[in-house]
Amino acid sequence: MDVSAALGAAWARVINRVGRGAFADRLGVDAKTIGRTLAGDSLPELHTAFNSMVIDPTALDELAALYGVEIRPRESAQGNDMAMIASVARLAAQWADVMDDGVRDHRETLELARTIRPLMPMLNAILAEADSLTGAVPIRSTRA
Image (cartoon, one colour):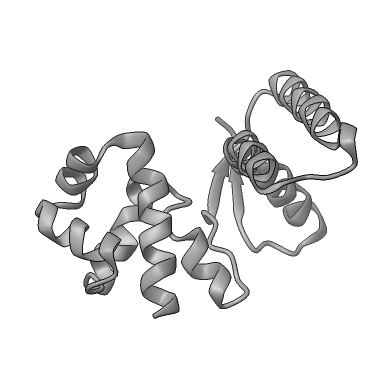
C-alpha cells in the first residue's frame, strides 16, 4: 500500500507540471494505466515506472524515500556557477522569510521544495566533481 501511494504521489507531482496526457504519451501507456496508478488501484510494470524518470528524473523520489535511498543520475551536467549562486541566495532569502515566525508549516515546506528541486541536479554536479577529485565516484560529472 505504501509503494502504491508513494508512486501515485510522485507521478501526481510530475503530472501537475507536464500534464496527464503528455505524461501518458511519453510513457507509451494509456490514460487508464496512469489513472489506476494515481488511484492506487494497481502498479505499473517496473519498466514503466522507471521510464517515468526519463520525463522527470525526480519521478520516483517519494518511492525511493520509502526505502531510505535516493535515485540520482549517474551523469550530471554542471550548471552556470553564478546562476547557481543567485538561485541559492534566492532560496536562502525565501527560507528566511518562511522562518520569520519561527515555524515552517506544510505549505511553506512544499513551496521550499518547489524551489529546491530544480537546484538538486546542479548541486549534485558539484558533489560529483568533488567525488571524482577524491576518487570516490558515485556519479560522473560531465561539463555542459
